[in-house]
Image 1 (cartoon, rainbow, N blue to C red):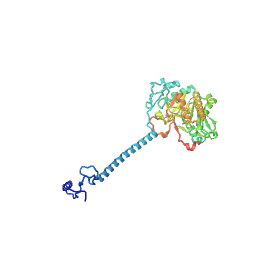
Image 2: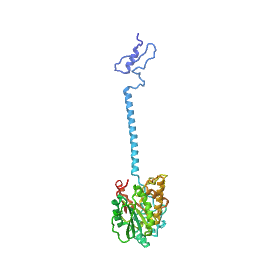
Image 3: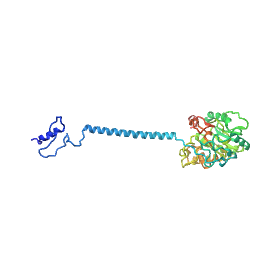
Length: 393
C-alpha cells in the first residue's frame, strides 16, 4: 500500500496559496504514519530556501561590488606610485632661507669692501650663511668699487683648468675664448692649462697682464682618476709656481662657457659655489657620500657645493686640495671610492672648514634646468655634456 494519504483539506489549503494557478495537490505531504521525510522540493510558505535564480543574482552583485573595490585599490596604488616617482624626478622646490643680518658690516669680512654689499637687495634669495659669510647674487654689489679696490690692493688670479683627452678638442677653445671676455677683467691673470696634449692647446691672443702656462700631465685610464688626481696636481703647482705670482686661485672644469661678468666680487679667502641642482632642495636630498667607510662620509651639511668651480687665496686652495688628495688616497688604500669622487671630498672639507664666500648658481648654471625667477644673470654656463663620447671608460 502507498504510505502517504492526502486529505481534501490540505489540498484546498494548498490550492488557496496561489489562486488561479493549477498545481497538483501533493503540496502537503502528510504521511499516514509519522515518518522522518526529506525537505520537499517546493517549500512551505514562510520557509527561507532561496530559489536558484535569486541566489545567482545575489552572488553576481557581490562579485560586481568586489570588482569595483579591487579597481579602486589598484587605481589608488598606481596613483601613489606615480606621484612618488614624480616627486623623486621632479621634487618640490624649497624656498631659500633668508639672511638674518641687518647689515653687511655684521659679516665676517674677507676684506673691507665687503661692507658695501647690499644684503637686502635680493629678498627672494639667501644672501648670507649662518656663519656670516656673504652669498654673492646679482644686484648686491657695485662692480666698479670692487674692481678699484682689488686693483689698488694688487690682487692677481691664477686660473687652473684640465683639458685631458677628448675634452681638449671639445671644450678648451670655447672656455679660454669666453674667459677673455668675462673673467677677472682688469686684473692680472695667469692661465694654467693642464693637458696630455700640449701641442693641441689653441693659440689664444692674450692682452697685457694675461699670460698662459701649459703643463703636461699624465692621462689616467679612468675619468674618475683624472678628476680626483687633479687635487694633487693643483696643490703641487701652487707650491712650485702659483704662490710666487698670484694672490688668488680659481679652479674650473673645462666643459663650461663664460657668458657674463665673473669678476673681483668673487674673490675671497675660501670660495665655494652653490650647486645649481641643489640650492632649492631640502638637505636630505643632497648627494653627500653616506658610506661610513669613506673619508668623504657625512650625514648632513650646510649646502651642496659644486666642484666645477672653487677658489680662494693660494694658501686656502692649497690646504683644500692637499686635504682632499689625502682623503682620496686613504679611500684607495681601503678600496673605497667616494660617491661623487673629488666633489664628495670637497663637500666634506668645506663642511669642516666653512668657506668665507659663497657664489650663487649664477656663477655655474645649467641651462637645461630651465627658467628660474631668482637667476637674473648667468655668468658661467655648463656646456652640453657628451659623457659617452668623451670620457675614458
